Length: 321
Image 1 (cartoon, rainbow, N blue to C red):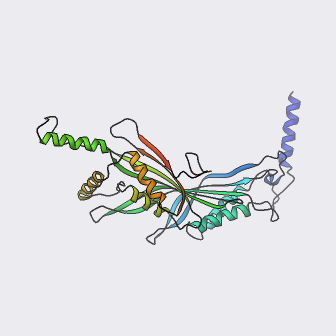
Image 2: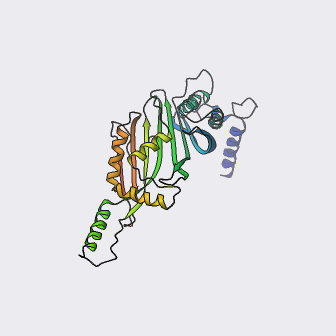
Image 3: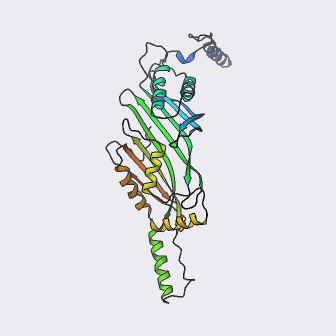
């Protein structure tokens, strides 16, 4: 038994040390060995690659942001693997030449499909994927005072280029807002009126509606050739739900925020329908989906909803890629 194990280990060692293919430096290159299993892999690559990338903000400022990239290509049947370091070097190279935009995404994905081939006579790879995650900072003016602060938006940019569909681009933003419960607001005002009329002596005559920090996670698919960026999606969210949380406030801003919330009481259902109307009116969006969650101050549980455009084979709860 020991002899069989020794022979098997020797065979494995021989196979590792004596690869049939070497690279230009003479090192063994197992990745280029033909694969005898005939099994294709739809997506193979790298997650969590940290890289600083440049973004041009609407105000003209150009800023480097710390990003985390995920990069994939397909691995066809008969191919053992891919040269993963090329994914990183291509992204870094393209990132050093300009800001992240649709041209950047198309250039990176085009190079993935071309440069990850084993030889120049191979056809382009069928598909390539790129996902960029970052926290996008944006200056936010205070509601009344002459102040501003940084508001950060958790952002995801996804792009896929394929032989069959060309370039597809998706953008996801997490948007935090305040939501005041309409029912609670109504009951608070009813109580105050009853107290003032002497119909009740309970409490001190002040009723406070329950409200909560809330979050909408919006994912949109851009229409072909649409000029649409991170700040455009933030604009749509602000139009639909104007009670965005604030980054810096003075007393006058806090009062203005209370008035704003009182003017926009909403259940999670109201917020969903507000977004539906605004998103469906924008022709730059081919498809979209939004998940919403109100972190209740009254209950131990949260109120939530999911709403989407509803086109055939469109975005639903399932991930895109």
